[in-house]
Image 1 (cartoon, rainbow, N blue to C red):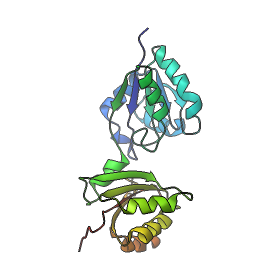
Image 2 (cartoon, helix red, strand yellow; image 1 turned 180 degrees about the vertical axis):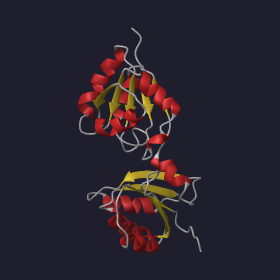
Image 3 (tube, rainbow, N blue to C red; image 1 turned 90 degrees about the horizontal axis):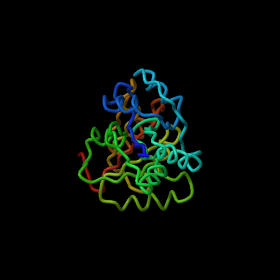
Image 4 (cartoon, rainbow, N blue to C red; image 1 turned 30 degrees about the vertical axis):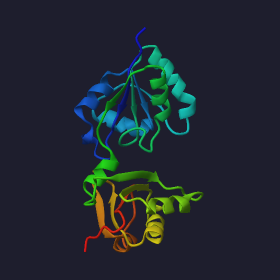
Length: 228
């Protein structure tokens, strides 16, 4: 029996209209959709009248479920993997099933689209010829070591952060990096999208005087980059 295909489908990072025509076509044609959060994904699927079997596939159950997905693929089922927002496997679950699919000679097909990394970088106004994606910093153990390592990198650095930790993280970056130039994006593609740009001390002042909500993408310029 011919194995099914595993599609890695990028989903909107905010604006539901950003789902590509090809993504709609694939999601409408597969047998199963493996979603990080079926409740979140249902909003996207309902908007585009996609009625398919959805199963939950997230960080906490990935170890238990990826083998089941491989069995389904071997049985000839086409499966689409989607995350809550953006491209799967970028600080989101998906690595294990994709790795297992490769080892079992199951074809993995990308359906590219939205990514908060490239979206934030594209509007940052910071050098994009060379960048490093860190994702979320360690909350406690290893945080100091990680920040000291990142400080040495001669490129733009991309960091994810939550609203309740954004101020602490910017203060830590200022402590270890100095008063670097940063671009901080909030709620990209959504109604209340905002972008803060400038030296980190200035951005901190702006954030501390505003209501902090939504997810953040921080881009830190390399040492020596100036906007003066």
